Length: 274
Image (cartoon, rainbow, N blue to C red):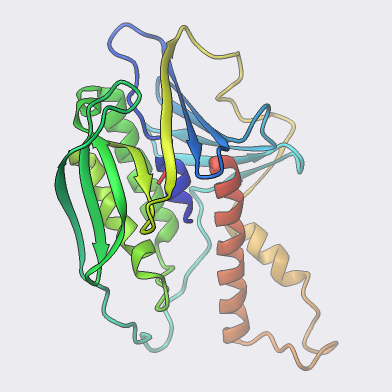
């Protein structure tokens, strides 16, 4: 599931005027917990119980995002994406499937919020059900967060068009945009009716521990481009292994591998809500 799905699972209402911060809690299909902390211009997203090994920091004012890895003691500046040079000839991609996000009626109350029920479909086949809460859009913080997350997911996907991408995965891009006007997803199911994520609680708090939104000063700071370059430099040279020439096709495969690595890291931290 793309990183955006793990991130949007945490897209919930922020506190009303006068509250310092918001803590939102949710769970995925396996019961794994998700958390998002919103305070001022910053949001911090975590996945799993206890202190996560990875987490995502998002500045909603300047749209900068950082993946923090405690095990590697590393900060990846996700605002700096890998280069995606245009090929000599534009590749032929199949036409994108027709996508619909159709209202089905009223949904149940989830985490105290009335919801509306929507069906997401691609190429005429159902992709899943989305229960969104229009009331959440009354919060300025929520609107800013949704917008910032939309820009973030679009930036991560830029230059990564996949001709064999699953139609329902591609349809989620439409749902991401629709959230900005329909409300936050409080529950999402897949095409078999299994819950992908659900919000369990929304709490206002006085604040979070000092340093929650600060980049660790003693961590190495890098970016996707540098990571990709390191991965490529670690590959055996063409002279050592003539069966692995570093032609443009190989470089493109490395870019794709790098992108998958970043998406996996983001999913696990969310880093990895949709």
